[in-house]
Length: 304
Image 1 (spheres, rainbow, N blue to C red):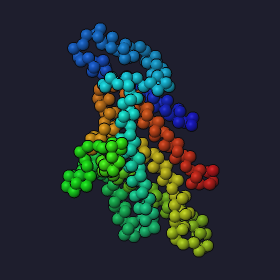
Image 2 (image 1 turned 180 degrees about the vertical axis):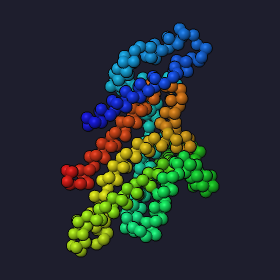
Image 3 (image 1 turned 30 degrees about the horizontal axis):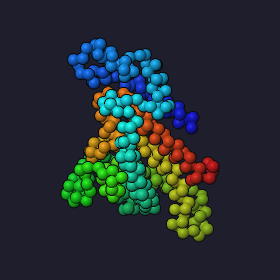
Image 4 (image 1 turned 90 degrees about the horizontal axis):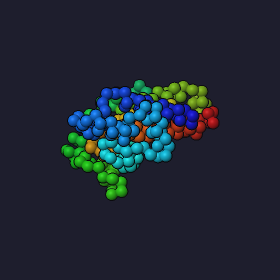
């Protein structure tokens, strides 16, 4: 918990300083290059950008503690309202991507480990190489072309909110989720195969076989549970990669999520909006990794 707080503070400080060191002035962006120095100084004071850096920082932190993330410079709306309106899209995409990753990678990893050195193992290995080599945006374009435009199985023109139609919303998120999941599946399959092969050489596996347990029982009840610990660590870390990948994928599939909002905010040097979004994304990633750490207690009695 202490690490969570310290990491979050470091992310906040880094983001705050980075967007004030890089060239450019948000007051110029809002008023235009023809604005007078007096107008610019007045707007900077209004936006809270005129004082010393430490005063700006502590002023913003004080607002965050009261759930006040400031006002967006680009949209002239409260930052928290903008984030809340876009968060369901990105969060749904990330969760669906994680779900697809798990249900596909675990069976493939087990199959590759059980068929070590055989044709199945070779085919899965080639597939994971391709999954790692192809960027998500390119696989997204191919998915749109094949399943959206040619076969017309999925809608690629507009996002449908969950509140309007659950089925259509799921269909609008499936292709981007698959595009994001492909490289994650490749990574998890490789880790799971390696860890399962390591576990198969342990003494407890020979003991389980000597007791007459079936191969399926040995694999799923004993080996898989121990092999999942490093794999779950990878999945937790990859959740941050999924959120980062959504920045590009949301552009490809024109999804109105946090990715598109963040790119717009960066392009317009919208400091309050960028800081608020980075803070929230960091909090989500850190919380997911905390849950992953706590899950070790359930997977491994030795840790408990």
